[in-house]
Image (cartoon, rainbow, N blue to C red; front, side, top):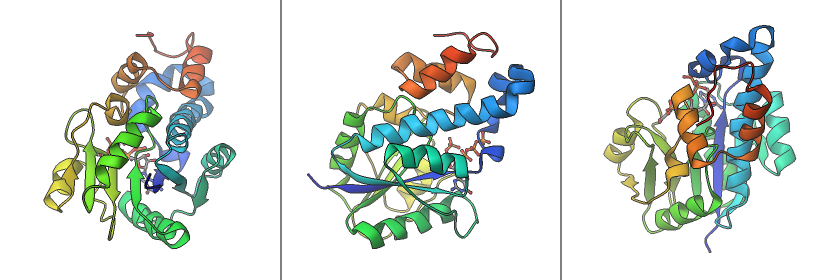
Length: 220
Ligand SMILES: Nc1nc2c(ncn2[C@@H]2O[C@H](COP(=O)(O)OP(=O)(O)OP(=O)(O)O)[C@@H](O)[C@H]2O)c(=O)[nH]1
Ligand SMILES: C=C(OP(=O)(O)O)C(=O)O
């Protein structure tokens, strides 16, 4: 099986996942730490699922966040710094180049907020991506992107609002597949509910169990 390098971006925790603060706001004094713990749990479940796919040769996390680096390194991922510190797409270009230099072979960018990702979904998506030069998986809404794969050539990431259309316009092929966990990114509390209905990974589940009494959260 062709083995991919998977690049995962992780922003500084102080600025990450602000759309989830309606959920964590009720943690009161524990909010900053609790919000960080949730963002780290989403990242850890995503990276652990990716590393468990036989189509993945390695995961490289692009981050300047020491806590994120510690969590993913413990899982078996590698990290590089957030260069040139110019936002998400620049970070992914840097990560993809580093991954290619280290491992050669195909490279894919994966969102860091996919707590319901199943290794088998990623395996199937990467196998499908191997049939074309560049491909992407749209998010559950259809407008965003959760996976951008470059079998050959540059990754050319265009993440951000409307990224599915931007990736298609830039020549990447949209992949059709029944991969609900791969498509369910978590930006809002409602997304987190949806991911839990699919079955979130152990770290996200443990966070929600341990904070259930203090956050605005109704288990699905
Ligand atoms: N390394 C790196 N990762 C980034 C950067 N900007 C965004 N990301 C990551 O890219 C993914 C998608 O980013 P956004 O949708 O902007 O997420 P976010 O900013 O954490 O969430 P909101 O504050 O709710 O918009 C998340 O995993 C972020 O951690 C960046 O400048 N560098
Ligand atoms: C950056 C993106 O997503 P989100 O803001 O939903 O994480 C995207 O889909 O390109």
